[in-house]
Length: 246
Length: 108
Image (cartoon, rainbow over all chains, first blue to last red; front, top):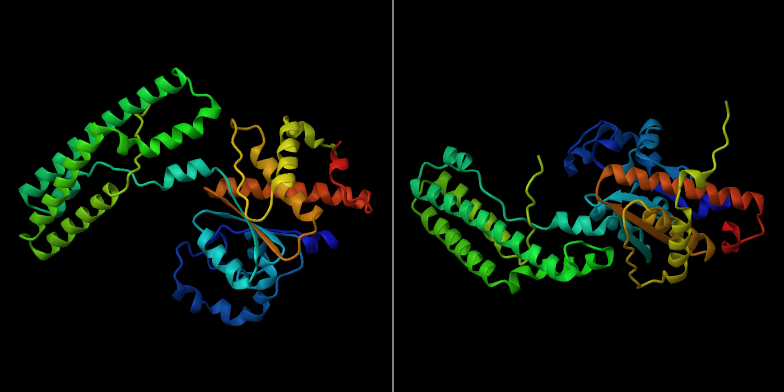
């Protein structure tokens, strides 16, 4: 059939949805030592000539969708629906197949941007106390939590001000893009936020300095914590944590 | 009991879907980024998927790949369902009138 040759639709979800053994988390060793791969290597290279391929259909017919993804005939002339987590894998398969005309559609793009943004979060004091028995480290973590609350309050106030100024309390659809742009810039503009971020940097430096005097295991934990906090701080974009509705 | 389903009843705002699809067919070129923005549940995703299938079939593009990435599995499965529906719609139209390849005349 002409249309089936020209357009074929593939759903790739990854994880246990495409594994015949039902493994949720894969590593390369799992797939290389898979007993089914040795038996069916040749069969999985040839994609059946059907217009729709979904994980459940492929599993029921005894195909591993992960292995099928490397065959050229699956990637050529097809529409592949995936999740953002599996996107690097699919892009690599497309690159390997040598396709030059690629259309990339990202659904719910703004939501994806908001989710992929690192957020400055509170650190659980009880978790730190169970790992490190140093009073100064716990004090620094308490200070960090206090600063996070302060930052949240400040950001919410600033955003409410922007919303009031820009669109009088309500938010029409055409203003959405502009507001998202402003949210990206909030730290560079606001002086109060800059001051709080400076204090947070001091806390991270204090954690690093304190870590040198601890036992090796505690030192590793505190250094890892400090690195994580610093990584979140080095970005200029932050998400306002909305108060949860009861 | 066999019931004939009219897909225009299932998609209440089919007008928006058709509009978005026509824009996508018209504007999509290689090296161009299109942004579709609107209120929820008016048919943005449906329009974009229909537009891409139509663009690929109508312009007879050889050796292509379309990757549709969504934020979670549930939405990915929904988009797959949309695409299967559009594929079936185009297939039925082609079977009825195999000589016609002008898609703008099909929707009316």
